[in-house]
Length: 281
Ligand code: SF4
Image (tube, protein in one colour):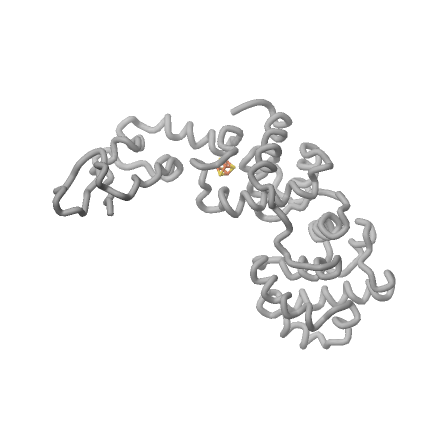
């Protein structure tokens, strides 16, 4: 693994930017107000679900005044499938009330003002300011950014506010808006919570989490070490080829399964177990 945290974070940013050139805000919106509502709805809910709900919600409610004209119960029913719908409806109505009464019907564009809206905390404020107004007010920290920042050794903190403070030290301000999108894309596609795909990760050589897995692999007993890919035995279902052969012959169309380094390092085979078998089709 290369360099200190500052050097590594710079290289992590460079690689993520190159890997995810199309990264963007996953919440569909056409203005700051819609993004505010979508972000409030996204708490404890997937972006996909929020987008399904808002695709009809934003046709019915086009302004803060429209939300205030509906009853609490009606709004709750309209957003029910996003979960925590009572609190979310209450927060949306409180935010709309303040937007209308204090800010002339427009979402304010400063951190200080936007935090005064009902149910809006720092993460929501950063999402709206960054993605709707292009203002780099901080770094959005959601579940993906938290997990990846910890695995990549960019922070040791657990609370989002402290994680954000650490990231604001490491990430240049010009990347504050895009950095979370790159991390979220990587978290969804590669560094998933339960089973990160470390073997195919572009950040593996920069990642302390992955380095710790390598240590585990080296320190387990030789008999229990994972079998390297070339030693795997293949059974061919092609009747004319008979049973076992190693390595797989050219007539087997399917390539050998990828070597799952993480799975093998975390779940080593017992010494006495038979070698793993794979079937070519
Ligand atoms: S090497 Fe593994 S843990 Fe580290 S960032 Fe990549 S997928 Fe995540």
